[in-house]
Length: 411
Ligand code: GLV
Ligand code: MN
Ligand code: MN
Image 1 (cartoon, rainbow, N blue to C red):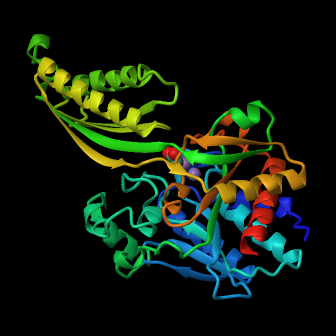
Image 2 (image 1 turned 90 degrees about the vertical axis):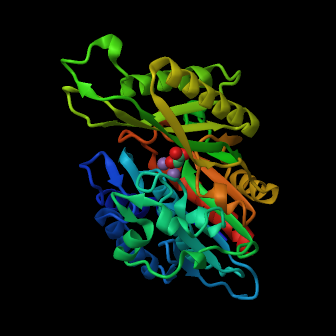
Image 3 (image 1 turned 135 degrees about the vertical axis):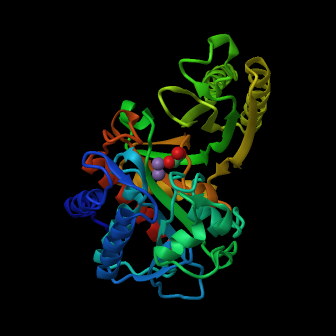
């Protein structure tokens, strides 16, 4: 069996997918259930059907495209990733795992391979937290890591997830989304590294052994508003300045955790009333904290809470924090790590074991299936920016390894 990747075709498909964007190129913005997301999904489904895959969608819009195996009594294997993109992102994050997964299946089909187990290509809904504030929405629900009441609790611009998904054409109870453990015999996700190691060290493939533990939370600061000209400086309780002090404390706490593996980002800051001549009375910060060590991450979260309390007293404001998620790290299955490494060796590709600092749908798939990830280099490690770039040859190598690993795992 010799799976040959059609790299030019895959590039054309990546180019086309990148055109479904809310911002002009090179930026890609594709917010879940927005018009561009729905058009991208429709385009992907035509490609899946062209490859003779049988498509079904679950109530949250996770899309499953199946290549049926010869032995339906054996649990299928799966691959896939996401096609939503954060505001002002690049074109390879997630999409390489979706279209690369499709090309891996087509390469196996062209090679005359018949899988014993079915192979599912999954497009997960909303890996990015852009719209509903929480990442990996689809895979979280699949793995029973999010209660179906999220359908009413999660909102975007005043509408619930249930209202929004139903306007996008996805109905049925969210309680029908979870998959029991054992549904899949294996899950393998292909993704760009989103870090500098493979590019810098000229390594073809990263073989992921673990995924860092992500956490996120919101901070609400309530101070006192007033006229920008009339309220004298000593009398102010400026909610934004308290929030700014909190954001700087978060940076200091992450930097002094004792490990370079602790990272913290204040990525959202919303002011009220957001008028140039008005002292901000309310401010909201959204904060992301990660570490490969869960205990150290949790210690950082506690220290941030303490800093919030101190700053609240000192600035005469109230500060409330609201957790969004605090997930444990994931560990990849040794058998899948092995299968990926053997596939690299057989193709003569340089490979290195590594930890994923970004999260992925694999973080949750690993709870219900033995999971592994294949990383490919991206230029300078740049990601979540329009400059994100992965070379066609690098993508083709990742797809070849994915095809070979799927062939072994699907038997
Ligand atoms: C995924 O996009 C992440 O933020 O790690
Ligand atoms: Mn991303
Ligand atoms: Mn991604």
